[in-house]
Length: 342
Length: 298
Image (cartoon, rainbow over all chains, first blue to last red; front, side, top):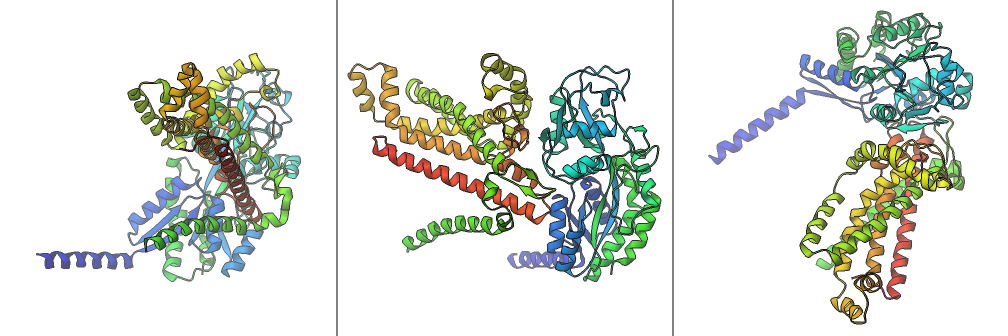
């Protein structure tokens, strides 16, 4: 009895071991913003290819870049493209280049709490810059009022709310503000964590929207997806063509399409303030960071196959999760890029 | 044999602590080299232009801890005296059990309590009341958002009061009966015997509990970051938003991409370690001093 049980156990263990040997595990880490769609993709891909398991940890874009450079993960993900210094560091530590692959699009929207105002407010670029710099302090400032004729704005002080944690959302927001104002770019700059001139910090999209909901006369910024899924009212933003656009998946795709023609070969492009009458100005790509040289041939083939799948079949799952699809021109250009992975 | 094993374990703890300090020291060398001693009194925290300073965070950590102690110590001590001296034993044991449970609640829960209960309370009730009565003082001037040093202090006070009550009650219960009886025999009232004889006897233990509370308040991360407003500025007003060392590390560590940025955050960790070390050292000295003065630890 004991002998049979033991040999059965041994067989099961060996079988599991054999099965594990067949399975290929690929590790990835990085951005939190696209985590919902990535986890859906990796799950679906595994169902279609049971021997390939992609394990993604959403530790933040900074963490993703660091772990990729240290060689702990096979590929990374980031909301902010790697700058030249980071690429050089990767190259010197790993002896190969790094390729950026845009995956989905996201947007950031301004949300506010004005109990007596029911209309959707329109914000000019100057208004948003002024509010976040602390130069525009009251809701009835002419810069805000002139875009919202017919709406009676209170004379109360604006309570500014921003992200306290480092985040791709902050990067998109400050990138837009940097493009809208040279002053902002010179004094404050764009990044995942910045030195905010004024305002309270909330942790995560939940922290910001929670603070905005609780604090009268406040303004904050959150991811479009978060706003849509939680039915949070948000305002319109003036784009570079002068039109006021309310953020939507179409507006974000228009922004990306507008830049598609001038897309650089390394895909490291910012699409905030993109041209186009219907383009939403505070949009951005999010990227996968794939090493140009992958020594393990099994992993290399699996990653290349996944990328092809992601650019074609994968994109159909974006909208259900409120992410915008890549414009066809961009997806096609990326498909050609896959061949560069050696 | 047992002698050697216990020695090894004790040495092990010292080893782990030294390793911790060593790691903090080594990984912060970029920031230490770039900023030197200036790190302690620089007020900017700018990750884009790589300009970092610890002063607003040290200020925030110290202020929130002091505010929390100012609230928690009278409350905690009064509760402990009630439970040890005045309450019937069964009530005292029951309440003490509940308070011990409070000490075990995770800090994120206190953070949620802070956001949903304390923040609106400070914005709508406590803030205006303080402004009405003490509005002239610089610590109560300025706009009241609900989040800020005061709210963080209140939430921290709620978190550390169980420690003070629990330990102080235990210490007060160990005061020998003959001390109380001697005081009463000499004609003291119940309150006089408690306040003038029993509490001074236990003062070393009570001070120990206060420093335990302080240690928790200094290091508290999640609850504080949810209610302090996360703004690295130094203001005199308690209604203003601020930032603490633990909160900024928790918020910015995962996304810190630059090497100097990361190193500056680790140096902040080193600063917090030093702060806690110094305060605990002072605590020890104070306890030794009062013990010599007649207080008793047990």
